[in-house]
Length: 399
Image 1 (cartoon, one colour):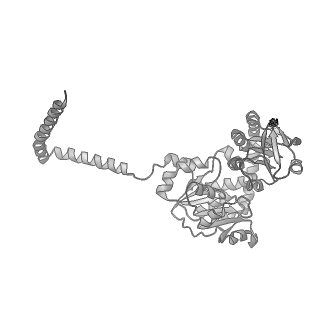
Image 2: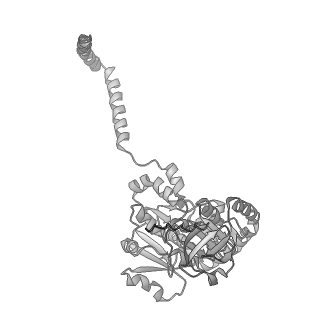
Image 3: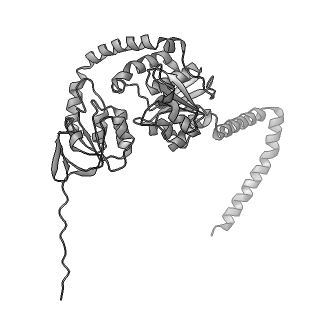
């Protein structure tokens, strides 16, 4: 007689498990991520926008060859990753790219990164306490960063003075923006709440919708159709082809003097892309595009104006954002402000209330005239009699 032998499963190894997605360039990693992956990248001073993209992709861990917080300025990405519950390891060194192959089954336990039982990288585990301490120290170095901003702003203004001062070089879109409100959406931290909060504004004002990079996907996911999509030529993080085809205009940012083949991928999709030669960031180019086409108001979704958020942007785009906001001035409004201030158009309940108030006011005015007094004298006995009969009927029904 044979007895079934129950095999005992080996205990699961501690830590977070997932297939590795490896590339030194963060943009290349973002384009290949799936839920449950472990992102292995090299990103000094993780910004909030990139961190949000990693969270949205559903990764379970992030392994960074460089420090997440270098101390140069208080970048907001690490805090978001830790708050989202991801396992985060940084400062592993560039050797991690030699030891971890794309698709390998990784295990992240504390600051250690394993492939099977083999330790392939050892770094620093980021915790809430560690991130708070690093951020406090980074804020003490803001003076040097602001001095750098002054220099970079001067250089950017020299390069883009025709665009900023005169609007030269902005492509002409088929979408008419003159005199209309324009909403520019960036897929960044808090964009979903902001877009949801301005629904009455979107429904009643019917603004032109501009999606910036994956912000176009965000608009479509929220049930809107982008009129204009602004993307960076040669980027690996483009909106879906179906989203690009639905837009009336697709504007592609390219370096000055770039060859024609930059827009060929869009032409193969059957999209006539408009070239926009500028060194501004994609979201700043979208804002300048709306301003150059005489938009009545520009509402920014996913754009934040606090000092920390401003400095959290990539170094190359800091001067671009600073000068663009100075250029637009009061024409640019944050979506959070619109949600607080916009009360919407006149609604049916407002009309009903106005009509009821008007009728009461008319009745009061007529009642003091001789004709009105006669009407009151004629109607009062009838109303009084009907009321008395109703009361008698109710009493008769009672036991």
